[in-house]
Length: 168
Image (tube, rainbow, N blue to C red; front, side, top):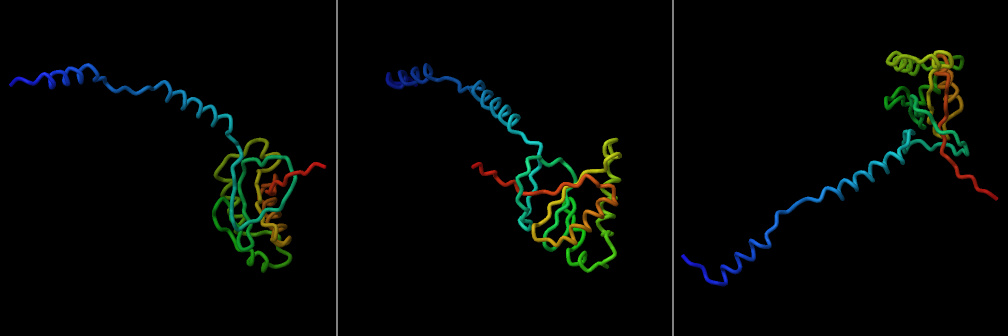
């Protein structure tokens, strides 16, 4: 069957203007390169620890926390590395002469057995970061710190909320 002149002209035009679609990878690679450099430059070694139950005290300290075992103390419970260890009520009801929390001591011994201590840790003790609510009783904090010390976690850091310094 023969086609009309118009149909022939249209098919010729379609063949002439038909181009294969291609993906321009240069601009895509530029975007990914920029993203990689941006993420590398803005990377932080500090782990953000967050818990809505804990309101940290304010401080103007400039030192950044080190990566260590996290011990969180809210108004109701003591949590080590995400595991519930004891309740604050139980710690307060312990005998007056007892400074050690057995559950915490057992958990810290377990965590210490999982990793090999470095020579610095053998000399100075292992590091631990305590995130304590600003309203917890001093007696609870004292018992926790005493238990950490007896378990060879003597590099104790207290987490605080950074407060901006207002210059006069």
